[in-house]
Image (spheres, rainbow, N blue to C red):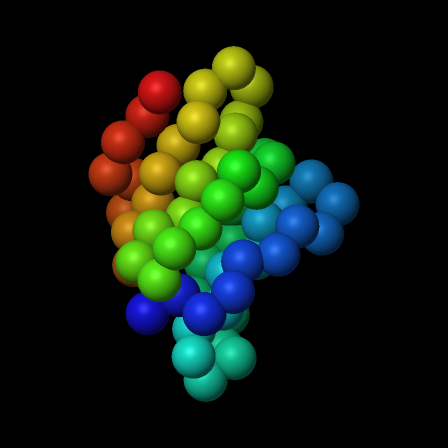
Length: 58
């Protein structure tokens, strides 16, 4: 489960409920839920699940 996603510089860091980093992506944080995180990279927005797998691109 995603607890928080934070933007630091050009990277987005995602943490679980135990405050352990579960993924890191390059780009701009668009938003997150308890199960997904969306990151803009270039002209596209990529959505990832809590395992870091890409589940959509817009």
